[in-house]
Image 1 (cartoon, helix red, strand yellow):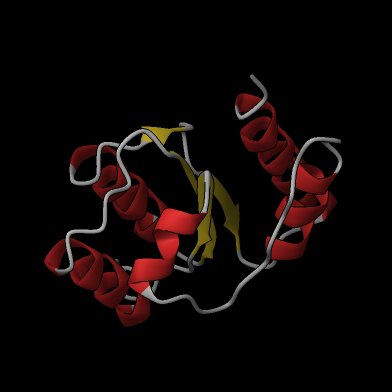
Image 2 (image 1 turned 90 degrees about the vertical axis):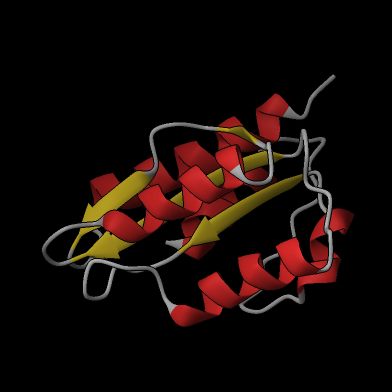
Length: 128
């Protein structure tokens, strides 16, 4: 799903896309937009995502006004992308793209096309 989101963002000529599987909290200020992908596990987000936002808050990382979006897969409930989006919006005052993109189980072609669309939408919001 992350690769498809990145492909969609790269399709916008003005975008510079970096796909990361791990970043430090202080690095988040270097990005104009942040798109996070997370699976839902036991009705929650992965601990790495919690720690990223907890450290960001503790370190006073300013994400206000940055564009944010989330996506993820799930088996039963799909809370993780919703929770991440809520934190981005309410705690860090980011401009979020709603709703989060969800794929049940393994993403099919339609879900991957939607992922590309999400990446494209986020990149297009950054065009002045």
